[in-house]
Length: 187
Image (cartoon, rainbow, N blue to C red; front, side, top):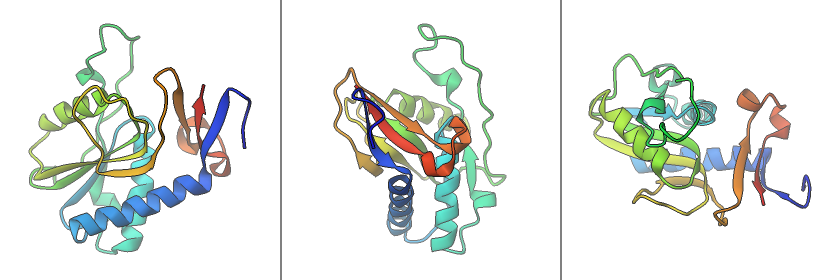
């Protein structure tokens, strides 16, 4: 379903759900279970995606407790574009009570583009502890990396031109119904 000639839908709500289910299974397989696993969403859209991933992990492995294994990692003050971009309000960072030391931390974000957001997340993470392993799960990888960063788990690779914009619209952030969730490319 296209919104206009300038916008093309590349994922519908059901595609997003399937991608998160597959990513959850990949994480369990890579981790050989969920012991010592922490899922941290990067605000804004990474947080609800991380929460959904946590719920799916709990379904796959009942030993996974989303209440004690989920959090959010704000990267606002670690961004390298603070001087050139508009003011941003930091979101709260919430970590599991046990912390992240020696854990496997999976960072969750909506779109991987230049890699600069993830570099900022790695800097922020280092201020909170020393995980054993850090992995990255993204709903969309659109290419055009500026830093040597890659995702371990990708919902969908979407080749794009630099001038295009990938927009992820999800219920918790965009005030739409869950059935209207989508990923679109704005050309």
